[in-house]
Length: 225
Length: 122
Image 1 (cartoon, rainbow over the protein chains, first blue to last red):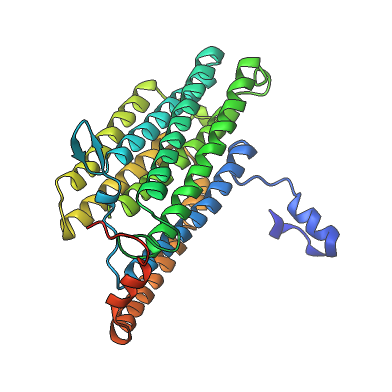
Image 2: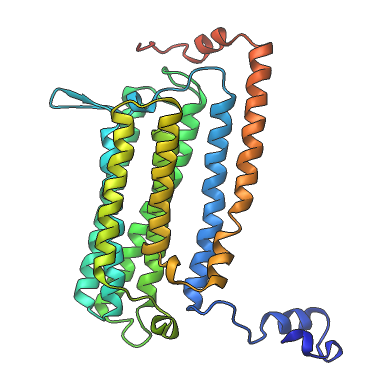
């Protein structure tokens, strides 16, 4: 323990900083990549919460009525007007992708390379579907409904700015995740992790589950509120 | 436990499938809150309860947080508590801004200025 050492024996200045930080002390009993991914996700939590808090603030402070998301995101399918249906389908797709990802992690530790790769590719495919549906949603809102970051015909002007900022940043995370998962899936298939273990699949999985987690909050706070 | 010694998490497949199903059910419930048009406090509490349950299952089971050591759990899950302070402060601030706007600005002319050039659909 550091407090038992003689402080005078430790180097001072910049050398001291390096000595202290490189001391052979491990706090987290997990692979370093996993600890670092968790810390990255923690920082991402702060970013997304800041966006959602900003959204909450403009929504509570505007005196103009907020557009009703249930109506804004409704679709007419086969003559039926169904509220929020696209968002519901997107939610189920993202949850399914989380499910296949969890299974991929499991098969990775069993060293079943084919199943791991296929499940990861399925996850990436669900992710790509999600982004595709989001692109459809954005197009509909911009072209048909006339929603802009500075205003919209339905109500409070801040609606567009919040919507594009929050869902855009989330969609970017999904897109990056699709590339990330495809890369890891390819490396699993190639057998890159046979010698150093399959923790990397679990780490990639953490990122993907986080993307799903953020959507849970966006779904509840932006679309259902 | 053995999985900690090896540094990775391995659990029966059934638990993932069960949580997957549970997330589907909870998502359906939250969608139905909107579909049946619940309003007010009922809508508010149902949405928040389903959201927190889903978040808990994803973090706990899918992300394996339930099986991690307390050092990691506390390092990751305690800092977001600061965010509750931010949310609380911004909520107070937002209400104050609404009150001052209500007091000093007439809201109707603002609407027509914003939607200028657009047709009002309803």
